[in-house]
Image 1: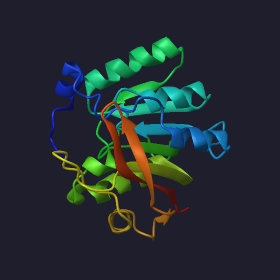
Image 2: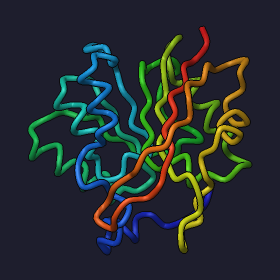
Image 3: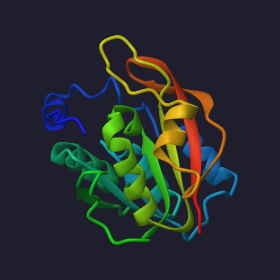
Length: 197
């Protein structure tokens, strides 16, 4: 995984171009449809400023947000305090999550998988497999192509199938969505994968 200095972007405020304007509508749809059990424990990887984590906690779910950036987690803590919700925040890498095995029912990823290099994607999926309970799911959302100066590692069916072997995962459709931020929208993909028991 890249050694990019995420803290410097969060310190300078230069993170708004990737941060959503509000919690993710696709997560809201999953909650509204009753597809996330009310007792579910959720891990938000690469949680950044914590908007999705805070939203899920507002829905009554038990949530942990993990990010490499300490400054991002300070912003996330402030948001959770303002919203009067509890979220467990943890500094850590998705390639070596500092959490117990089989601790979560759902992992949500908005914009992390698309910055992970091919060489690290199997490590990513291995960690997802390790931390999820049997039949747990991971929801991944990220860029469908490289955009401007951003060097995204696009999310495609081929890339997902390579990182998430069928022997361990059941993949849903990889479908187009738009990811919004203060900088506008990007063409993206969403996919849900379920851990085989």
